Amino acid sequence: MAKIKSITYCGHSAFLVDCDGITLGIDPWLDGNPVCPAKLRNPNKLDIIVLSHGHSDHAGDVLRLSHDHNSKIVATWELAAILGGEGVPESQRVPMNKGGTIEVSGLKISLTNAFHSSSYESSKRGTLYAGEPCGVIVSDGTTTIYHAGDTALFSDMSLIKEWYKPTIALLPIGDCFTMNPREAAEAAKLIGAAKNVPIHYKTFPLLTGTAEEFSSACRQKGVTPTVLEPGAILALS
Image 1 (spheres, one colour):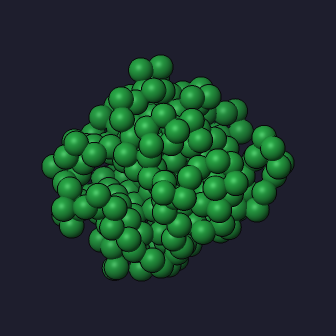
Image 2 (image 1 turned 90 degrees about the horizontal axis):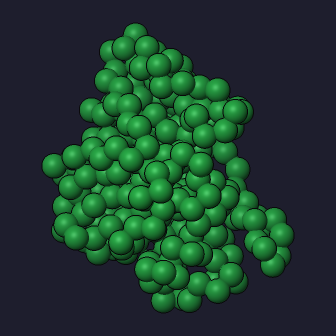
């Protein structure tokens, strides 16, 4: 299997994962992302894109990136079908759904539950229902990343700990559309990852949750916070 070497935080909920020469993007909203560093907006390569849901602050750059890099796109059946209608060829679309696990380029990818909503803004067809929102699991058998997508807190996160055993959790803290910092700290406790990275905050004024609030709440629960600034690289193995 490919080995996960590091993740790069591109701001908001976007990550680039380096896996032995393979680059995987999770919700890689890069161009148009106001907190994404300019040097990360046009990656040198992007072999795989995994989408948690269809909202523009997660999937809004997928057409450009997949065209430029011939990327495989892993998404729910409905979102993958929408992208087909937007011109992404079938050879690049990898549809799946919650509860399923697939292997792409030596990485195991699973979709988990998330409590949010999902739609896709098509320039040709308007707002389209894009299936259910998801969390994302990416694993090389040793390192396991859990990207919670945009979700509310839910108690079955404890099952994610039991079944997938994440080593790093990427958790939204912005409030308004997702968990707030206190709820995200409780999620971190349920998930049990060694590293807990706050995401989906500070991008827009409506996202009022802060990394400081998350870190304080984590410490109160005996959980380790790992705060990354946009552009930061976290070595994982």
